[in-house]
Image (cartoon, rainbow, N blue to C red):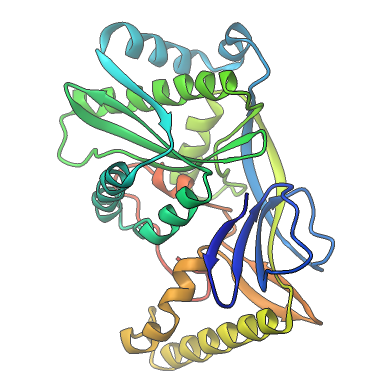
Amino acid sequence: MSIVLRAWPRIEEFWFDEAIPPRGVDVAWLHQRPAIPEIAQPSAKYTLVVDLTLTNEQLLANMQSETRYEIRRAQNKDALEFRAPTAPDASSLVAFHDLFARFAAEKGLSPVSMEYLQAAAKAGVLRLGSMMHEGEVVVWHSYLLIGSRVRLLHSASLFRGQASARRSLIGRANRLLHWLEMQHFRDAGFTLYDFGGWYAGQNHEDFLRVNRFKEGFGGTVRQEAEGVRGLTLLGRAYLWARQTLLGRAYRWARRRGRHRLPKKRTKMITNVEQQVGQSQSFMMGGAIRTTQRSWNATSSTRADLVPGTRARRHPDRGP
């Protein structure tokens, strides 16, 4: 089921191989599609996926030895309490949103949009899972459930100010949470576990560390496509107007030697920026192509960055 980002013009988000309806949608944001033939140059999107049709023994065998060790230790010695992913109610949405806001402030990241969480929950595709220790949530995960695929959307935990032993425990809790959620989703009938992003470059050590964390669970890297399409005259006009406003504001800031858009100029595009997230659209002969960060990060990728890492925002690359 698609996620409605805006009522007018009607903007919806479509993941993987979800079908786009022939009418009723003005703008379609397309994420991790096998291909987007309607777009001349869609953005490449890399992610790492784990086959959930395998048995527990096979999944563990595919993991790296350090990951297996951390999972076993967390299960046997850390007295952790697993809360399986469920459809969130209003209170759990607020709890997750508030913890992620603290997490984002520590890392210099953009906070998660409550409006987006509510839209995904309304569509029935959002799940929240967590790991607790001594009555306190130490790790949160959020997921999108689309078809037979479950995709990690956010991962958040608070490391700053914690002792070394506590940070190690949180790291083990995160690994165990992934492992138990894999089993939970497999038992619910899902066949593919998507880690929500994979850095395709070689130059950023922090992002490579995130890759190594995910690769510890085995799985394979997959390249997919992302883009945005204006499906109606209204939708195409909306995208053109958005690009024009963003372009003018960015050029205004650059002429003044600023790295960020001035607050007054960003007010008129704030709502659009929150809705469309990570891609920047351009008109190309009636089609839309997108450009995004070369590391193909998603919220979940940024949320897994090591302590102290800052995800810098650039006005022509979205949040």
